Every structure is written in structure tokens, then in C-alpha cells.
Amino acid sequence: MIRELKKQAGALVRKNYRAFWLPVLLYVVADGTATFLWQTFSDLSSSDTVQYVFLGVSLLLRLVALPLLLYWIIFISMRLMKAKVSTSAFSWKDAVRLVVITFAPNVTECLLSAANAVPRDTAGLVGGVLSFLMIISFVTEYVFFACNYHYALHKGTVKETVTFSYLGMRGKFISFLLLTLSFILWEILAAALSLVVLFGLPSMPTVGKSFLTAAGCGVSFYLLPYRYVTYTLFVKNNVKVDKKRKHD
Image (cartoon, rainbow, N blue to C red):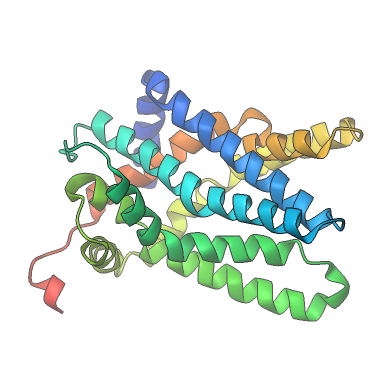
């Protein structure tokens, strides 16, 4: 099943890439900027005010900009699949709802990134915290996996959207796990290419390294829409919630 979904997703992305390039580009830029600001914040020691400004902007990008850009990619995916998405104009109210809906998985991802940046001189403690955060991050991603899909269709309340995803994903953990793991070779390729370039250009400034990592040395420009089109197809084909089940 997963192989067929990825085949369909790859064909859809290659045929319609012009529809994805802007949100994908903005996502990579926002991701690279957030990484750069976080690294600058971590290394800075001259001004507490500047530190907090950098931290605040980095978190704003992680918790607001990236989720909204990801929703844009998924919304485009659904339109290309001829799904009956909501035709009402996207508003500030929608933006706030999406930020609230995706807050739990995004904040755990931020905490995981922060823990990864902690020096390893406290290896035992850091290792334990990292393991715990990785589990929490994966579980929240699983529970909230279908939220963007449901919101694009119905623009419902936060409760309705999260309930749909929670109930719809129940019993599908193994499928979810296999689906996410199916992209691991792409992630390894992006990481390997980035490392080759970084080691080949050791004098590259931090800002360059941040954007290179966010772009996966160019791989992310294809992998990002390919991954989320596949995820959207998975939800479209497999996540259903019966009316009776909503009251379980």
C-alpha cells in the first residue's frame, strides 16, 4: 500500500511542481532562518535582550510560520487530488486555529531540537531526556497526523479537528510507523550531501550552514512536497471516523 501511495504522490508532485514551489521555498527559508537564529541565540553572550529577541523570532517561525506553510502544501495537495476542500477564504481566525491545533506536536519538536543542542558533558541526563522527548514527539505526531487534512475539508473547531485525527488514527500506529520510516533513505541522502558540502567548505558562515541544512542540500525541495502528498493520500484513503465512534 505504502509503495503505491508513494508512486501516486511522486507522479502528482512531478506533474504539478509549479503549484508547490512557492510554499516549499518559503518553508525552507523559514526553517533555515529559525535554525540560524537559534544557533546565534545559543552562541551569543553579549546581550540578554538580543538573545530573547532571537529566541522569540525563532520560536515564532517554528510554531507559527512553519505550520501554516505546511498546511498550505497539504491544501494544494488536496486540491490536486480533487478533494472537496473548503472554499471559504483563509482568514486570521483560521491561522490562529491551525497554530493552536498543531501546537502540541510543534512544541515537542522544538523541545527536542533544544535538547539536541545541549552539550553532551551530561550524557546520561541528556540521553534520557532526548529519548523521552523523541517518544513524546513521535506520539504527538501520530495523534495529530490527520488534523491538517480535516481542517482543509471542514474548517472545524480545534476540538472537532483534533478529535477526528485522534479517532481516525486509532489502530493505525504500525501503518503510520512504516509510512514515516519509508522516507528514511531520503533523509539519509539529504544529511549525507549536507555533510559532504559542510566538510568540503569548512569556512562557510553559520547562516549558510543553516540554510544548507534546511534545504537538505537541495533534496528538501522535492522531498517536502513528496512526503506530505504521500501523507495526505494516506489520510484520504485510510482515515475515516464513523458518527457512532465520535461518541465513544
